[in-house]
Amino acid sequence: MGETGKPPRHAHRGTIFVEDARILSQESFPGQQFVLRLAAPLCAATATAGSFAHVAVDPSIPMRRPLSIMRVDRDAGWIELLYKIHGSGLQHLAARRVGETVNLLGPIGQGFTPHEDRPRALLIGGGVGIPPMVFLAETLRERSAEGFQPFAILGSELPFPFRTRPSTIVVPGMPAGVIACMPLLEEWGVGSRLTSKSGFPGCFDGYVTDLARLWLQQLDAATRAQVEIFTCGPTPMLRAVAALAREFGVACQASLEEYMACAVGGCAGCVVEVQTPAGPAMKRVCVDGPVFDAHTVFVDNAA
Image (cartoon, rainbow, N blue to C red; front, side):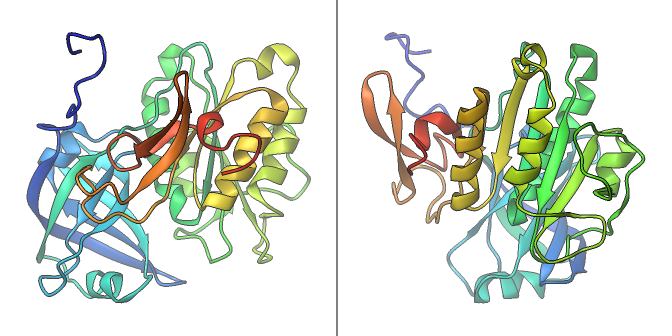
């Protein structure tokens, strides 16, 4: 802390690393979705759920792309990124092969902050907002001795970037037939359910907030007081999740999605208005976030 008791202006300096990361694997899924595993030991060592990497997709393209970190193995020194092709830049990244290297900056940003007094963690991820939820689920699983009980609701209109399967973990409040889960979370003992309006087998036919409401409704007041929502996805989804959290009186942390140029706080191109005790303030999503208290960003259900 600085002399004024406030965090230093450039607290992120010295925590973001530049690495030439070797591609260990690149797995493709329907809907032009890819899971990329990179040997990036410096990034893996300090990444937290909610942080991201700024990736140089190809030597011919100067602008980097911010990609959320989905998993890390600190001992083996790798990170995993999930991305969907959107524009020519990520098409170039999808064409990269095992053994090649990509340059990255990371880890960047303030991640999620679980609280022991709110151990019932509801993780809500939509589309490319799924990766931080996977990372957070693994983090909370490793902290189960502290009482954390995560439950994930993941939504997608594209086929999911994993092979779904029926869950064997009973989750109260789930409608009959809503049994599809993410196998990786199931293996970790973390309950999950999937939602989609695309008619995928075993998925809830509706939005993530619709299923989350059913789960919240079946909790008594004492249990609901132990709930905190963590979410990442498109802005309309985040706004709806924040409104749901407000409706049920629960805390909510949201990881925002914004276009980023530098991703290290220099250009201020990704600012968002945040309500603070001193009044509205403009915060940079890259280094002040991307995780914010959702109630300070989506005030009265308005962005």
